[in-house]
Image (tube, rainbow, N blue to C red):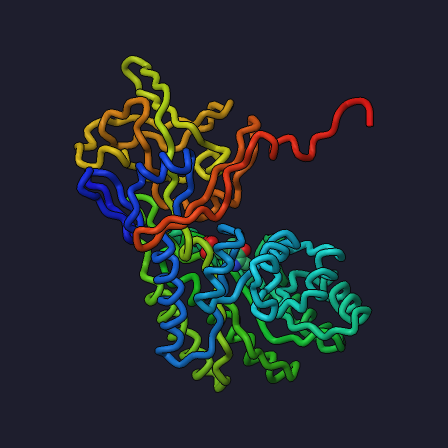
Length: 438
Ligand SMILES: *Cc1c(COP(=O)(O)O)cnc(C)c1O
């Protein structure tokens, strides 16, 4: 089986995996394992591809990094350098963005239960846009903005009755979701009308997000068509014009060879074409188009390096090979049977002629990283590289079994830079207090 390398990954003269011009085995030795390695030129290329497609088509747009995929100071700074906007979903992500010096006017605040404290913090930081999720939030946000003598920009999140996963999408009339206002059941009109009475909220437009790891355009196009059809109605009946149409994220990426994602340019071009066509057909002005890629900006840029430890043969069934990480640094296989591919970073020239299952070191039978991986027979001390771990790996990491969270390194052009330190044992007990005494 041939190994498909992403981004700027190559095999070097030592037959080692090289990422962004840096030997992965050297990285493992320098920083220890498990180690998250990000090829930042991959992230920058993706960011530019999304942005430049809008520029080429001369469409006013914002590309917002949906930062729950990987939320750290250094990545926020990189996204700022690339001119992207930023989605945050909590005060913690907002705080991280503030620490990173990310301009508040390009931060968009999402979430279905923003607390009063979170909203006060966001208003005090002058966050650029709120994506309002429900009627309670309209009341709360307007009251807080009024108390703080502010006027805030907002979109409302709608559920267009479209749900997309990978190759399929389903349309449902009555969208049963915890997020957003129903587009087709009158809730959206009620929200628009309520917002027309709120002096401290500037209602700029509509947001939807239909799913993730999507490989086809039809879900996006159906959602856009449904919203734009409503836009024409709202202009007539409510005297409400949508200035911003945010179609969310969810653009698919390559984890294994079963995945065949579209290029960022293709996703964007099809979205632009659909929005242009439908607005023109209904005699509407073209709104600004916003998108929110998360996984597709950082997922394939990330590789996790592990050290191989013990192994166990179950005669006639399979061989388990354990590494020094697992569900604590990547919960996705255990959480939703996510599939990954891997290679031995120190033996890239050897044929992948053995089938082994990669186990984590955590105390759960479900702590498996890859079932039936094709590799050269791994031995203790090998460096296992697991690909496309850049999204929802570190950001979902835990301290289960009191394992310190792994370090993060950025690589590019033969240079490497530590951007998140490995947690220490002292970090693990930092918030623990003694049973007795002062
Ligand atoms: C998670 C999320 C995204 C990004 O999804 P990806 O699959 O990572 O691209 C975008 N918008 C919203 C509202 C989200 O919740």
